Image (cartoon, rainbow, N blue to C red):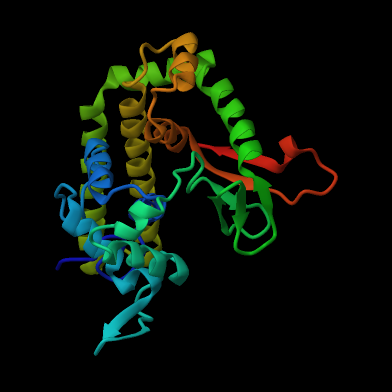
Length: 291
């Protein structure tokens, strides 16, 4: 039985795929062409639910599916679909579809979206709501927190560079490079096979629900770690060399594409919580959660 990307056949969210969907959504909202998104996913070894490469049509179909917001189309009207949990909030989904429906992107060409370094990275430190850069401010729709974009980028960049120029980090990355991309693709394949085996045994009644869920969770964690290693190998391949001086030089080089800098952030930082500004300094407001 085929399944929609992001969920199992029985409607449970697949965390790694849901994260990919949210990442793709952020990129579309940030003005990244769908073709470029497909190329990025393929380069990182991320496949569709059927194991195929990404292209414009499957990404567009995925993002237009009302299933993403927990709804379904019924005679041209969106109705609740209680069988599946939502992955995106409705406001983001509507904005994405407005962008995708403009096939020529004419209005977005006249008023292009500014691409931000921290798109998809920040969250409200109070409730966990995503916080998006917009102009000179990073803010969450919950209104609990906001920060100037310049301050957020400066603080987070400083901490990122301290981490990726440290000897332990560089040595750990070199070990992953030495193992090679094929090793991590093999790990991903084995994790997927493990999930399939667990699903069959659970469906056959030979495994209880608790054991099934624990096994699937463990396999997904292994898969996610391997995907992270693949992405990191791809990013550091763009460095002149794996030394602290060259990493800093690469980051500071004006010719380094913003997408490459964002790819490094995505491979090293899971997310950043922004705390309310009270008596703490700006620096204390940004809590970085490393991968």
